[in-house]
Image (cartoon, rainbow, N blue to C red; front, side, top):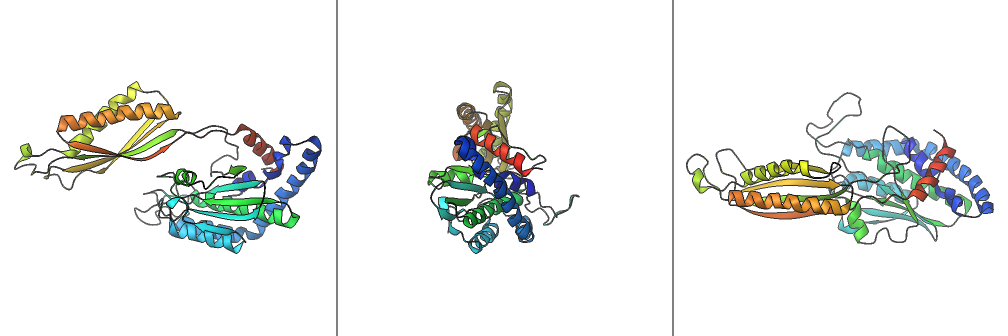
Length: 347
């Protein structure tokens, strides 16, 4: 968690690079003090922060169901003087915590959702906490708590020094499955920010300068006719056959798309039992590519595979687009400032 805090606590006044030489010197000195004051606050409260992180690890709640994880952070933020609005973006587990007023308005992004099927005790050996349950395989128990701690530490710094500014912490649910931030952005939750930062647990303490893959997520559901698979198979129209044929088509498609594209799928509904021709079957797809327009082109070709599968099996189909996300747009200026701040913080 400390590496994440080093990334987040030392940057605010390194924006002096964008100011005059005089201001740069003044602010550069203050930045060093800011980093130390922030780390002092973290050191004083690390036991409580670790306790919160460990609890979220144990809760291991899936996206849009992070009730206990979100509530734990909301309560701690309120204890530390933040005003919290819950249920933003039409999501019960999304929230915004705000302290201060005026400019600059600085935001920190937190996540706290888990992944299905990777339950794990706090041990280096594989040992499930809940058999078959969810777990924090991506470290979001650390991600959210460290970003929250950085927001509170910055608030303490500004308050002690009588400096203006607004500090905001955004509780962002469902990063792993439904990209909750997109719905928050849709509702203007991030409007008015001057800068917004986050971090992610990893093996290196670095500033990430790249982008990400754009993605479409969709369910394709086929509707056929149920029949006894032994007694009257000729009367059935298998929705599962349609799913399998669609998957075959998509797998042949892989040779003819750009190398950096990715297509993944899982069958979420394949019928009830082998001796019943499935009347309904669903497959969940992700289509990824470096650019949004590339995703759209590949997505349309995947839809043609679905249409062809429906024709071949004499079934009907429907497509539910779950999300469509653009690639990340890198902010090279802020990345450079953040890297310089990390040099001040040290390892």
